[in-house]
Image 1 (cartoon, rainbow, N blue to C red):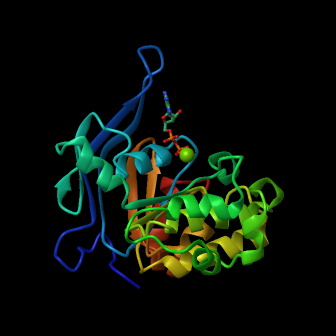
Image 2: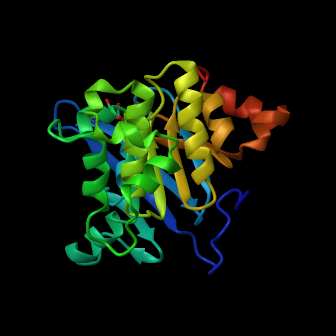
Image 3: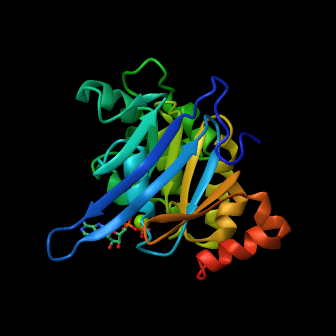
Length: 255
Ligand SMILES: Nc1ncnc2c1ncn2[C@@H]1O[C@H](COP(=O)(O)OP(=O)(O)O)[C@@H](O)[C@H]1O
Ligand SMILES: [Mg+2]
């Protein structure tokens, strides 16, 4: 188990730091404050679940954390450097520290590729890259599946291919946005096992609207409501109940 409540990394600063972040989306007609004054620190190796209702800003936050989406206000630092005040070349290097596991893995794969090629392409170049066979093993996939097209795989297998692809660059942070939400319970459990095994080796940011999923994998649970962080608690608080849990459920009644 790693840091709690935004505990700093060993070098004394968080891996990712959000300070007063505000993100407005949409045009003049439909303008949404997707994030409002968000303060959030994530330490190296820490597992953080981001929970909240649909539309609460979870995906927006993930895009902002990974330096893909620029907030209008506030500051995002990764490893101590302000990601929007460095040259684009450095920002691209920051983005490469993040491994993405999307909700719908299939649509993120090039349809011409086999599962093995999806992972091999991600592994190509880059000193830290790993061999596809090793990555298949790491996510509990039979290496024989490497020759299959992702469309012929089950939902759970596809998600594990997506995790293998994300791990190919040995990221400092693994980001999973609703990565298990379309799966049946058994497949979901197996994908969560894989994510849980990575926890501690790298930071894990897991977006979910399922509190059980959060509790299973995360050290910490951050609750968003209408773009605001309304709770930021140790996952243990969910086990023991008490005032923290009551506060959390009040903040996110659908959880
Ligand atoms: N391109 C966009 N234009 C306008 N509003 C958007 C856009 N994308 C998302 N939103 C709105 O921003 C809010 C946060 O969205 P999102 O981060 O996707 O929420 P979540 O992932 O928690 O469901 C929602 O109200 C959503 O409707
Ligand atoms: Mg979302």
